Image (cartoon, rainbow, N blue to C red):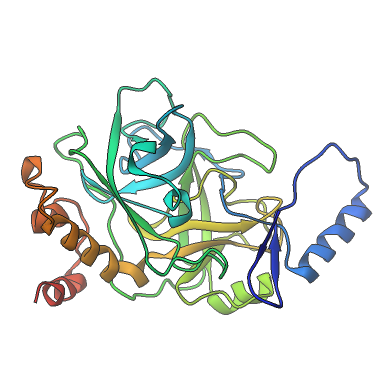
Length: 314
């Protein structure tokens, strides 16, 4: 299939098949793909990663189709009731059509650690025809997840802070291990590095939005693939990115993966949560998780974000 970006560019998804080609032909194909900016996919999984340790990423959840229990995307827990994911994972879904599995590294359709979604908030500027700009969404559970008392959600970065090029980062997810591969039953992790916007744009041959960031390895071969969408890119326990899109075949050189840059959306995240918790339909959540307490119950607010929160409350 193909996705029109604008009158000059088209991003396309290349299907896999059983055709046999020589190494020379393969290099020619990659050259053509680079010239025409093709081979993009938007549900991505981890390639060449390793097993995550038990309890290493307690805030990581699997977003599933409620009817089948089938994994579709990743998401991260900001606290016991609020989750962060990619807009393209949920834009066409009603809350009753999806749920999450939490508290385990192992995917299990019959898991008892399942929580239901009551509200989905997709960024109002989300536009898949414009390189999936503003690819971010929030989800609210119908009640707090039954996690350990010492549970702390993933941390938000400082508002509008920049991730320096070559910063080490970790991507986690259950996505495919390769184009045409399979969903991983056990949670995977892979070490990547962040690319500058300029380098990312040069490698992709298009201008990457300033609200995106890119990560991978210079030589290719490690990163996201189908099924990792919506999952977190992490630097020092802080979520700096949300898996948005990548080129196919997964992790092909020279293209790094493209993420929604979370620091650009801290104000939107906090304001959306505050506005939603003020709505009467939610009422008072259990365990003091409504309103401001709900935001502070996780590890969302760093010192530099407190001023932003106070401004939003004025």
